[in-house]
Image 1 (spheres, rainbow, N blue to C red):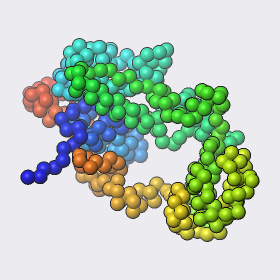
Image 2: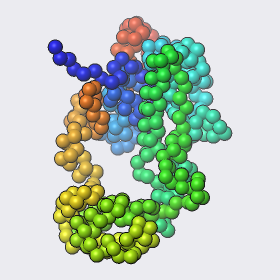
Image 3: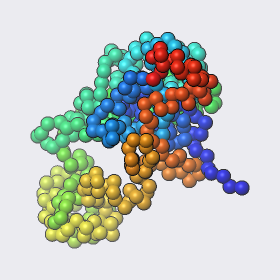
Image 4: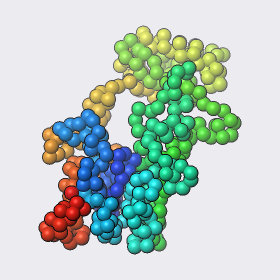
Length: 401
């Protein structure tokens, strides 16, 4: 008799004390792998992102984007009984993740040392701006500030103009991915040793880690990157070009693609052997002249015609789409990236779903981001055996919401 394939993280329970973005994005990823996420929130207001505008039927678009598949439990961790409830929940969980400023968790008796003593099995992931050690450990920091400090902004933007931050919270997003892989690795170690461990993740460290070739070049040559806008520092042609109807971005990143672009796509075999462009180094030196030739040629036909030629000859290129065009596109629909979710207040809620596709495991269906405190009673009842009298007292004492 056949049965549904197991979810990769079936049986793993996460106690999520994180707010805003890096932590919540991590726990969304873990939920997509099948983990149970218990999101702990303050009874008054909850996750900071619940109040961010704009709102969709009184629900913040920001909160909706990073909190599907979770159970919301409201606990005031500044109270002794609230702290004890969190300890009791931690006993039933495999992972705790938090991103409070340095000192908050220790002040409330919930830091790693306290957790390790009572729950040696627990994987404890701590996310902060600058890490839990060093002279900046207690400093506050947000994604755009870290983009500035890490050097990321210095080479972003057009030449001769101001440094430019990435409009997305890109460091939060990268950090969430590092958090997810670190937690999975720590769980693998625990399966071997029976012991949890502490994970100290700094947004600043993650920002430096993703500088990749930029950092390698500077560290070994002393060369600072310049701002090139949509151009690429080491690859030509590589950039934004206009066609008769709309812009497209194309990349001919190696010599084979360069030949295919010139001969097959542009119909300009003559420029393949032009001394200014024949070698990669020469193309870099003469990028403006080359870009001008390509731009002049692309303006002779509409975008769809050029995209067909790019596909035919295997040269990477795509139309510059709006967010609406991307999310409403046939490929988004065919890949199942847009999911419809039943929500108690947002009728017809649609969100971007998981990009993960397994051959042997399943990704659970997306569930609505929780209302504040929606699962307080069910979780505390199921895991801690509490009942109506407990809930009435705890609410009266403002320990739960």
